[in-house]
Amino acid sequence: MLLGLHRLSPERTRRLSRRDTLAALAGLMVTAHPPTVRAAQPFRFGLTPVFLNSDLDLLEALQKYLSAAMGTEVQLVLKRTYQEITSQLLSGLLDAAWICGFPFVAYRRELELVAVPIWRGKTTYQSYLIVSEGREASTISDLRGDIHAFSDPDSNSGYLVTRALLAENGVKPQDFFQRTFFTYGHRNVVRAVAAGLAQSGSVDGYVWEVMTETEAALTRQTRPAWRSDWMGFPPIATARENASSNNIARLRQALWGMPQDRVGREVLNLLRLDGFAPGDPSLFDSIASRVDLVRTLG
Image (tube, rainbow, N blue to C red; front, side, top):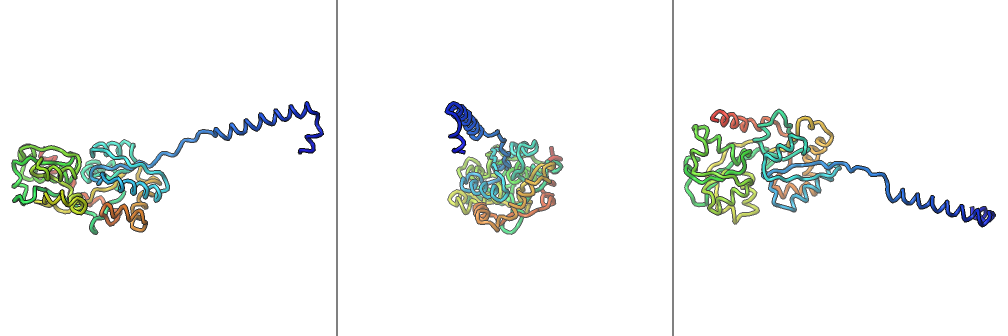
C-alpha cells in the first residue's frame, strides 16, 4: 500500500490523503456517538412499613441480592403508607411488593401470591396489643378509655385485628377509646407507647419481637398485654395479570433460594427470617373473616 502510494503524483497524494482523513474522522464520530438504546426498565419492588425499612444495610443487601439472583436491576420503592404501595401495585407502577395481609385479602381478585416469609419455622405471625411495662392489662376490655396508637388504616395487625376484636362486641374504636391516632409504622407504635404518647397500641408481633433483639432498651418499656391467634404472615404479591411473567418467576426463585446464598443469608439474618415459602391463599382466611366482621358492623 505504501509502495503504491509513492507511485502517485504529489497532487493525487494530497487529494487522497484529505479524503482518507475525512473518512477516518467520520468513522470516529460514528464510534463516539452510537445509536441511542433505551435501557431495560428495572424491576420495581415495593416495601411498606410492615418491612423493617429503617436499616440501610438491610436495604442495600436486599437490593444487591435480588438484582444478582434475578439477573436484572431491582429498584426498591419505599412508601409511607400501605395504601400508596397497594395502589401502585394494582396500577402496574410496581412489579411486586411486600404488602400486608389486609390489602391482600381486600384485593384478592386482583392480586396473586408470590411468596410468604418463614419466621421461627412458621408462615404465620400474631398481632399484639401492647401497653407500658408494669401496667396491669390482659384483655382489650382493660384498655377502655385509652389513648390508643394504630399503625396504618390498611394494616392487619396494626388496625384490623383490634377493630374486629371490638366489633365482636358491637363497638367501634371511636366509642371505646378516648382517642386514637395512626403512627404509620409499627416501630412508631412501640415508640409512642414507650414515650407515653399513647397508653396502648396495636402492633405487628413480628416487628415487636425483632425489636426486642435490636432495640431492647425501647421495647422493655412496653409489653404485650394480649396476643391474637396466628395469621398469614405479610406476603409478597403481584398483580394477577403479571403473575405468569418471567420476572415474577425469577423473583420467586430468588426468594426461595435465599438460604443457599451468602448475601441471601445476610438479608434473612437482618430480617430474622428463616426464608420464604410458596404459601397458600388460605393462610389469610382468618384475616378475611375479620374484614367481613368489621364490614358487618359498618
